[in-house]
Length: 416
Length: 208
Image 1 (cartoon, rainbow over the protein chains, first blue to last red):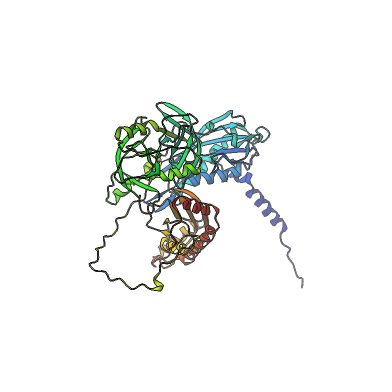
Image 2: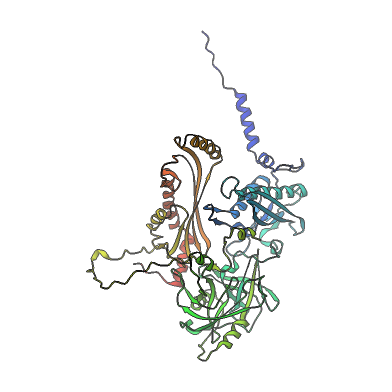
């Protein structure tokens, strides 16, 4: 009786292994997942060895929100970030993000091509549309390409709010294919000679609209200003405007915990606000608040409101805040709360969310919060920023307060 | 630029920080007479470890009571409090639960069988659960730890689910992530720096 021993079909193993290599390769992944109707020319290498630096505004990358109707979180920002990472790995494995460090500078790295993208999401009739406006620069900041790509998908594709990753992936693919097809880049044409920290920020920002606006005020004669830290988050370009004159300003010191920051205009002034010696606050004393609220809706002139110190503490759990009744609006953040003697009592930082409370049947009126000047003084000393202190004026009045407050304030604009 | 936000009617953090809505505290009538119990040696308030982080508010998108209790047991988060609406510090536990790629096809087929048998056959799901622990300071993320796992479970559609849709295995895993997070937080340099800065400005909170 013959015993037949079957050898394993080695050829099958080899074929499977080969197919595995082909299908799992980045080149195949990049080409096989291209949107319908798109093809890469044969002379375009994928994965591409061009050292690309890619910029997306921090505000867009951090976007997320809770959708009450479906009880789920939607992450448009993460979808953009994931698309950038995944597609960057497929098309441009050497791609590096252009991102700010905690110190406010760009992280180290070099590049040959700079891709700056400005996303806009829109939802209408169950459809989600992502538009990516983009610009491409070489290492010498010469603009090589500019365009816009749009992708619309069903909002709930692949589960609740699953349209976000789909739209981000497809739109990002279209942009990268544009770059590959129109520039036919490679590392020889665009070597990694430019430094990411040296990128001109004007190339990246969207000048059409500031992502944040707020209020700042001079704290010393050197032209240094104080404001709320949340006004300045992730700004690439910061500007202060007063009476139609715009000054570039730089971040000098910041505390997220205090929600306080100092920016430097480098331009001397005689309009700085002094602090009251000892930074005492009297419950009920009159205050003036000046700010630049509702940019785009109101004229670009400072808004002055009057009120009084209504409580020595803020909401339950808050620290360092007092409550005041002078009305404020979005854009008032960072503005000064000034005593009738013209002394700084606090820095406007927040307000009760009236819209949320109305849902609970409550209508708050003029419940606003400012950080006490004593913490501002500690912060300024810690940051080695000059400021002056004066004795409380016994015979202060509204005119003194208004002149001091209006003279010291500027509008801050943050661009990404 | 962010038209869709307006369309949805949700806020992503305006220039002025919006505070959480205040809840009206229940009105408690004042007692007409008070009997003060004798002080007891064992009735002293529990002391707070020196390593405890400053008081912070808490929000959990899933199993928030269970996770809150587990996290609060750790030395770092002894001062965690759900009612601190105005605190600049906030611990958020967020989750996403989505079917895996295979789970979508399986789930659809399973749902057909389950529906066809009026629920006699349980529905089979395969979901990926990701849970993220974030400590935020004035709404800005300071530290973030994420944990992810995939679960397959058979769901009897008529049975009462007390596992937040995760199944026993999923809920046990979720509870385990609380211990992982608190262990990681204990050695986190950014949290240590936050504690130092907080105590610099607002003093060391009382430890009992």
